[in-house]
Amino acid sequence: MVNLFDEFFSGHARWFHRAGRFLVVYLAAMLLAGFVAPLAHADRVKDLASLASMRSNQLLGYGLVVGLEGTGDGADLSVTASSMKAMLTRLGVNVGGSLGDFDTAAGGKMDIKNVAAVMVTAELPGFAKPGQRIDVNVSAIGKAKSLRGGNLILTSLRGVDGQVYALAQGALTATGVREEAAGSRVTVGVATAARVPNGAIVERSVPTSFETSEYMVLNVHATDFTTTNGIVNAINENFGQGVANAIDPTSIAIRGPADPGQRVAFMSMIENLNVTPGEPPARVVVNSRTGTVVISRNVKVTAAAVSHGTISVTVAATNEVSQPAPLSGGETAPVENAEVAVEEPKKPMFLFQPGIDLRQIVDAVNQVGATPSALIAILEALKSSGSLRAELVVI
Image (tube, rainbow, N blue to C red):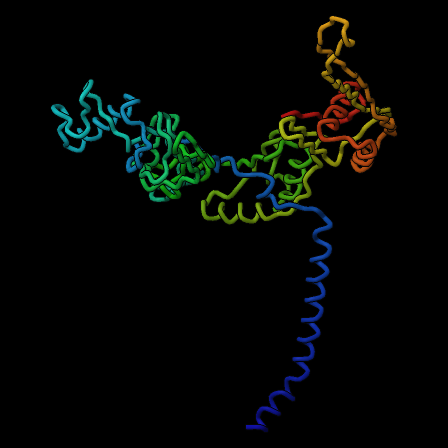
């Protein structure tokens, strides 16, 4: 046995040596590719664009949530009572006469505190087939205080054409909590909105032109001439000139094979192509409610001098009593003394040089100790003066 192993390894020693050298070279190439690839800043086509046939569709339905712990609509909402009565009638329950436990002493209205009327919404993905499941959102439309612990009764979800595309039913997942006691109330999150994960079953598929159309259309997520042109060039370089043509800055027409199976494989290869997207436009986004300011990398400022400061006025009132001289016959009188002080902090003026970049803008604003609200005011003033070479978006 030893001789056989020795003979085997001695006969294949040269092969193992060459394989080892090949493995080292291969690992080195992969390591080099790992360092070089990120420098190109290339993205996959599937991250930059999507097939037009894959568009989603919104679904809407009206339903009832039962099983609530006294936090439903009750008799305050007539539509809840009528919906409950109609549902019981369809189930063969006679509610034409006395309503028993659902009948109150006054007015004969249904007082159902464990039921709530809700609107059910969902998003039907592209190419969804009957039998697949999708998530649904449930929101109270009446006087229900909480949907926690409820169960959605079978609800039809319809599209904009009025056709039923899915049926929803299941236990609700509500993250909001609302508790009341002794006149106090604690609310965490939104207790009147909930979700049913995988709560709807698709019953009808949306027709698409993926199998029958001569061209497949890609829609770029962010409308950009540079990105669209880069995707077209990448497809034509890999599959031949004329395969892809840009319709406009958003859409690209791709001539694909006639066989559906080949089309799937063809689109798989296309969406994995690497493309360097175009630089986004210079934009400054300001959230005036939270004081958040986001400045993109391409923002430029022309020559401008900026000074920002606040004037502080302080008024201090001192109440004193004026006492008359002894045996003068005078009366004691209150006297109010006020001291007014005006303070204006010394804020240095900083100068923007023509064509400065983002880092220099931030450094210059930080020199004067500007707060987020002050930074918003400075940016708006720069935009009004024409010095800010960017789109100012206030949300």
